Length: 386
Image 1 (tube, one colour):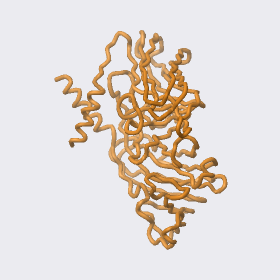
Image 2 (tube, one colour):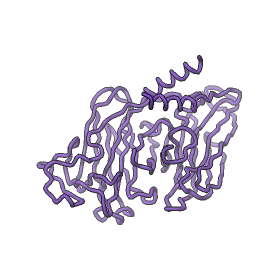
Image 3 (cartoon, rainbow, N blue to C red):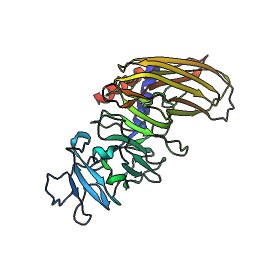
Image 4 (spheres, helix red, strand yellow):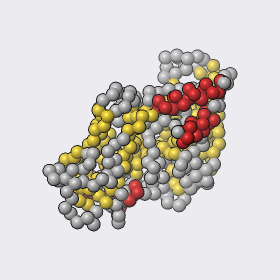
């Protein structure tokens, strides 16, 4: 009976975590109206007076792009290249009180531009961020990024905007395949002392991408975290169990090479005593070969390091540390996992690194519930049946 109640509560929580948002023409497969250029051309310059992009408004220099040759896009479909002063935007209705994250694809226009500066400025309701294509972080000539669009808002209208950033050698950005999802206010998902302990609550994954989602520094404390409750240090990759070896659940984070790469959680301790912290460290079964070292730091003075030799075949190990909590009740204690090593996949020399998942923190004398894996499977079965 108790387990049934927990399952019902968990199903309710899962149903309130996400709010699905549908963008019109999110992959630009509905072509602009009144195209007059030869249909075999990969780049068609659009005119804001004669061409209309379904679902989008635009101004400045914008090209309609077809994949092929040197242009690679998800599903070999279509995208938009933003040239000088190129801007595209769309508004949508929000559904309830949520934070919103945007997943999108950024691609260079040629191999030469992959090693040069290709960037786009993305804006939500009240913030903006510049994303730069980074060579060697994936096996495709396009990359997927995620952006935290806003703080919590009420029902209304929200807009997203992409604007070109001047590149070198006319390396203008190509945008494709967008997803927006609303995420509910933070909750303690599971009795383990961390919110979003298994990194299940984060940006939406593209159906036709096996590359994961690149996430970079979001240390602005005022902003909503794109992986809920976790601050990103440097560059990480958000990965899913459909395409990678994920130790538990659907999502995990990969600490891609160096500079450093890490995640951080701020937590208050309401009482003193011995604390046990567990986590799983592994590789993503992506041929990432080399020596992994992960540094776990609690507060300013406690640090441990964990190493493993990765063969890139999906191995994993659970680590545990115990320390004494003597922090002030009002003190926000940073807990971070970071990596500085440089490792690459053996097949395509893509930058990679250790996977972190299933973080658990508790007072040593307390018991922790392990319903999460059972409930997760039950929820998946319920969703598919419905």
